[in-house]
Length: 295
Image 1 (cartoon, rainbow, N blue to C red):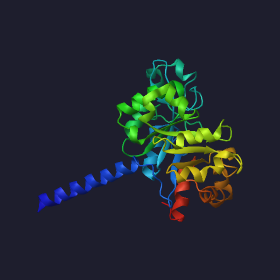
Image 2: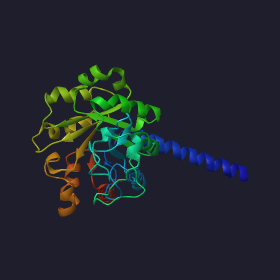
Image 3: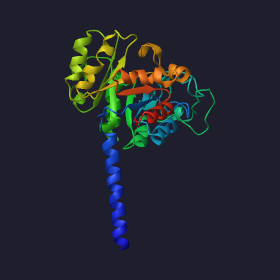
Image 4: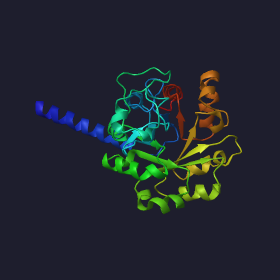
């Protein structure tokens, strides 16, 4: 009897893990759900682009964590938004002028500028191993020079299926530059009001099976990305609104959510048909979605 119980528990644990991995690797957003993307992790809880900020995303149920990547003097990839160390660490100078060993001696700052004694700058590999089978990862700052190198790290850690690469260049330009690698990654083009040849750019990606979604930026409701929301979702790709700044969501940003209420910002975006929202306030967005039965 005891053996049967243990076997049953092991089977349930295996099924639970399988379901978790399947969810992490899925990019289909049901009509009654909204994908929550945390910009640089939950940086209101821990320093941006830190392992703690990523872990917080996992703990509170964020779907995707967006992180930034820079390269050190000795060719290692680390999590850092800026090209310099000054704003987010207790160091100074360019990331590219320091070795990984030198950067590892530094400590990250909170958004208030306070040093976290135990939070060092993580490598991309460390971040991906933490996220593995737990949360999707959206890589920023990897276009062009870092794409191939980031690809190798993602491949090494076995996290290709849960990683979203993104950039501004057309599908044809990306294929010409990176070849078959583009057929191995999940890709999300950035489509904003300044994107040249908008129709051709969007169609090139929507016709690709490797495009999982489109990141949108629209300053008005007349902008091409805004009017393309329905077209994007009808192809089975997700349409991601970026509520970080007013000019990216026709004024309906995170600030409006906090000052005037989420219905006027996140609620408005949802009514326009977006399937996901990238935010600096993921915990507040999740709380709002729960009130709507969307989590």
